[in-house]
Image (cartoon, rainbow, N blue to C red):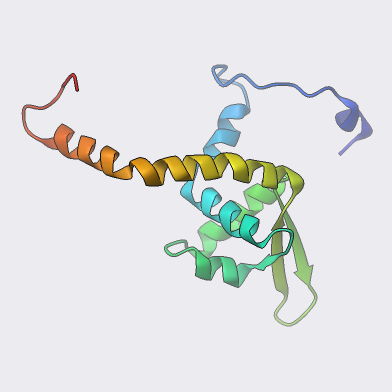
Length: 137
């Protein structure tokens, strides 16, 4: 990072501006895999978690998808990566301070989803019934 970038005032994004990078960031942090990675790493904070352990604790994620997710989170400054010089190399991940601040927000969204999933499922069932679309309630 250049000293000019460090000293530049923080610029707030505008979600409704099609050119704003806020949209790309929301696309990345809004995925189930990002939410799971952040949760697992937050539970270990301030410690680290190895790649294989993340893979084991996230049922359904492929090795490639986990790698892509971690690469993006590291690029965004949310996750720090450390490679242990061994054979094979041990790769460890931890949340940065910025990543820890994201966990609070994502935990709220995860909690909301877990609390309201039955209601959303029921709404989907009703919407899928014949002659129920559009409906007022």
